[in-house]
Length: 323
Image 1 (cartoon, rainbow, N blue to C red):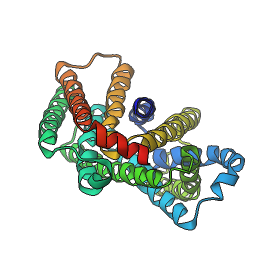
Image 2: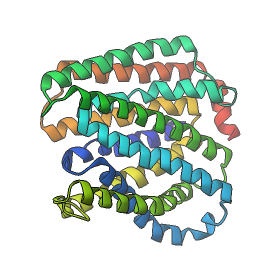
Image 3: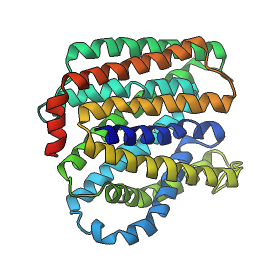
Image 4: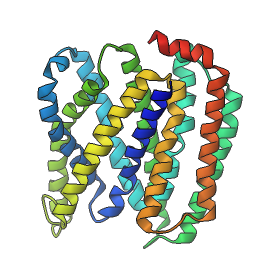
């Protein structure tokens, strides 16, 4: 159980880096960033896949289709929406919306997997929802007071909607991915991460070419294929691909095999806190009082989830051992 939590923590620290990527290259469209990241991931996965080809051959066609669905929802669509949201609202707001995942995932886990993984009492989720609401309101107020360049309400609102879509995408990914790993305990998490990276390659390549064509017609002054800062862009995409997509996914897959879904979900709070920390470090400023409260609210949610885990320790532990 403890090792699973540590792997989830490491995954969160890696995934927190994705919130600063769009801030480093704000002039790059979200679609180009999304496709570039996963194109780099697919290329990096090729030699790893060759070394692990024996294990990959064990996957059935149905498994590959599952990997494709997971990579579309949890990778390409999720990151496109998230990068767009960050460019429209700023990283702290988008990060806090993603921070609703510690509640969203247990809610759906209760609805879908309660018989298998145990159940969090609905009464215990109500305080978490209240804390999330306070946190989101606080960080939006703080960010609006901080000021955004060329602020526009329509753009800001669309960014919030995109961030909510990314929450739905990642919640589905987390639950479906955990379900597959729990149903296939004989499959190594690294092999499953490699499979998802491989199916990403052709999709992201096509998407990158489409993005370049669209940019060429809509923004002919934009340098193609790697934009106005090619070295920075390529280096950033490789770094995010390795640390966030590869190392982060691998650690999360290990955690998914070792923890029940209802306990795993709240641990995504590590990604939110890491994202806020990295954003403020990039800005070279301390968080405002309201933003500090948002982080505390998220910690309260995680603490409440930990207490729920202790109350159900016996059945949940048995669930882990059965997997």
